Length: 135
Image (cartoon, rainbow, N blue to C red; front, side, top):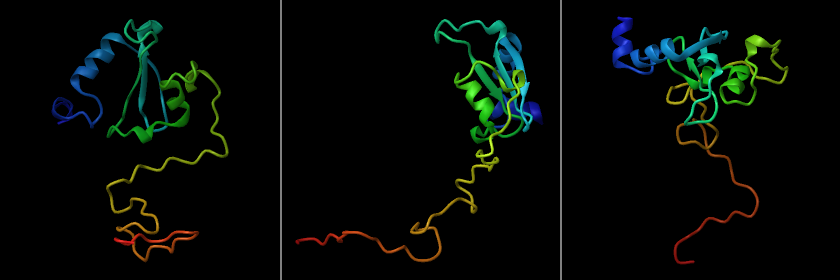
């Protein structure tokens, strides 16, 4: 079943092409607390088209970008050259814990005034005047 999912879907882990590319050109850098695997071009070789090394992640389950921890996010986007496995990275006190992206689900954030939220829209403040046609 896992092979069938890899052949037919891209959102359940890696596809067969990604698996082959990773096997052929990738070097495992480490894993995060969600068991996602992080890779870079073998030997740190520069990509001729990009001018820097390629870095990528293979998600353990559903491919959800919000499941990339802060330290790994910085490494993936070349903000830092040192991956979290090579340094003593500690989460800062101000960093919020992971919360899954709930967009499109009944648990999605709906602020006051949203047509999907319960209750009434809050009154506007300041010098707001509603527009009326012909005035």
